[in-house]
Length: 115
Image (tube, rainbow, N blue to C red):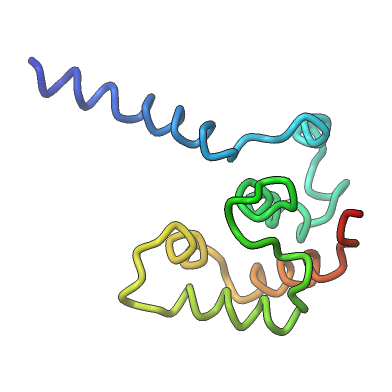
């Protein structure tokens, strides 16, 4: 019976840890969560996951503001194909198609760095 309680608690703990990592939308972005892909663009929609860790305000992980499109594609493909990688970036990148990676890189490379 104890194993059943642990198995039921794991999904809830996973959701709590995502919130603690900043995976949820920040205050200014909350209004965007109701917009469809067509309204904000596929690249913006796909790259929304990046902002949780790579925003200027997070400070925990490098900002992507200075990365160009080619470098973003290179790095995302490296994470996707690195068979020994086990980080969150490796896992996320493996879920993207080449077209997804191109859309993400184009969107992120066209964003104005915050002042």
